[in-house]
Length: 439
Image 1 (cartoon, one colour):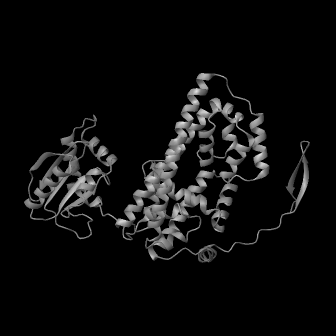
Image 2 (cartoon, helix red, strand yellow):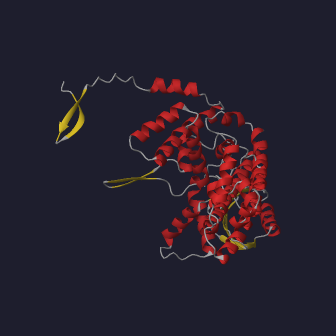
Image 3 (cartoon, one colour):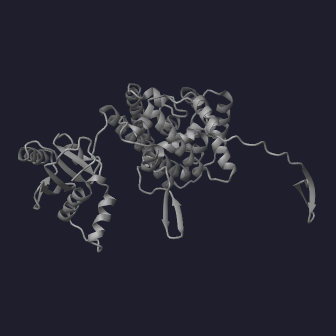
């Protein structure tokens, strides 16, 4: 069997592992043998270590190819520390479709899936890519930015829950503050969780609170105090007020901890990103600020040989559309199976680039004028940005807007001057409209 492993290693054996939460099932076939051995190992570091060491002893340290349905996860991290194991991640959908080829009924069990992964590795190993981890710094950055994004999503979720409760008994708060998840809104609700308690407070106390939270505009403060005086309770139902205000205080305290956690991630991510060897390259990209620069570094990594063309990144990230053809039918749709966080990173960067890149803004306005939706234009813009980023990344060269503008001018065909069209008002069916004068 031949694989695309860089060193073209001669494997001593091939293994398929069907992983589970507590017990893993494996199927092994030694090179030159037709016998398939099967067994189980517990999901503990000790059991995995015993299994891996036994393989090393049995095959005298020669490499062993291992196929499993994980590219990251507990089992992958356990196995990746053994030099003689070469891991081949297999996408779960690939295994599922391969299984359907032999079991259309959908029947499955763990020993059969382990044998299926082994068969996939033996017969189609050249189509599988071995796991080659990036540098420790890059992988740390990848994990950090992904976890930070999960916290941001949690912040949005708790903010929506807080807003829902406030609408029941204290709907003025979302109007008084731009974000209910902000520190000032949280401290405000902790101090005055109901309108009744707020209206009993002295104006000077509220004035001091706003000033202490950097809201010092005299006109805004007076306007806010006037609104508080005029405010009317949304409901007098004690059950609703009691339950919702209790929930609001609980959510405010949760949001405070989430904000602190995000701030901690931001500090660690910034420190790590600034020491990354590709920081200057990604920092030169228009619209890529403190949040997106680390995410873009994590998106491409440092292994320049991983991608041979920009199209590979466009397809893998889900930015490139999928074309389906069958007979006379032709259907284009976006990719449903892709790393969602990666696609989100490129699309968010495309949005932020509009404020700092003239050609990106011109492209966006041109497509919008043609009737394209905002989201479709952003995806198309992200598609173009990936091609530019790929070239900068491959050449290790920071982005230069002027250089790209000159390149656009050179590749753009010389357009002929549009003929001057003289217009006139013309009455048709009682309505006036503009029309061109006859030539």
